[in-house]
Length: 153
Image 1 (cartoon, rainbow, N blue to C red):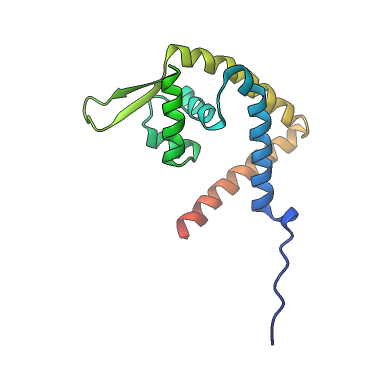
Image 2: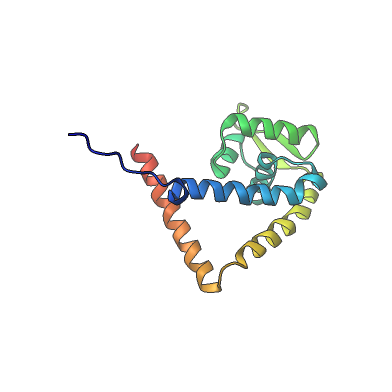
């Protein structure tokens, strides 16, 4: 006897919905800073990580923003070419290099952060204060559980 396959309702499938939402939000935010600052999404993410946590190695950046090494490397190379990011060799381990924003990079970062925060506030306008707290708590739980499931795989 053949058991019918379960239907996958893509439009209700949580991984799909989260992916599409993340893409839409990312593209919408990118539209706000791309023209003025000429940054790609990966470049902005690298700058955002360095603006908050520098100095970081490229590997550290990739882990913080969940981006593969090749994408991080390309983004860093483009940012260095524009004088927005600098690399410093670790004096204790010459094989390691730390990344940080240059003064020009810090200035650009400081100009983009208010744009990003304004977009976030406008996005949050769709939710009440209680719903925002609930959403943040649920996101924290889903992040933690997704990491656990990934480590079990």
